[in-house]
Image 1 (cartoon, rainbow, N blue to C red):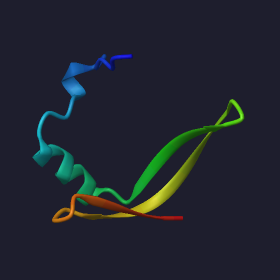
Image 2 (cartoon, rainbow, N blue to C red):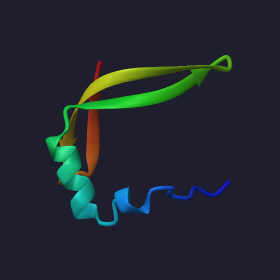
Image 3 (cartoon, rainbow, N blue to C red):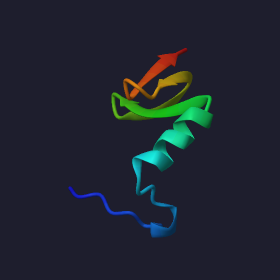
Length: 58
């Protein structure tokens, strides 16, 4: 299944744009599903740009 942007005006097109958002952010929301029941988990995170890595904390 291919993914297509519905709002092209909101598309992040460069790594620089993504890095800026990740550096400014404090929280990430994960959408999950267990036994066909959806749920979300909000976590705080740290971003290491040199390693291109998110560190999540509950």
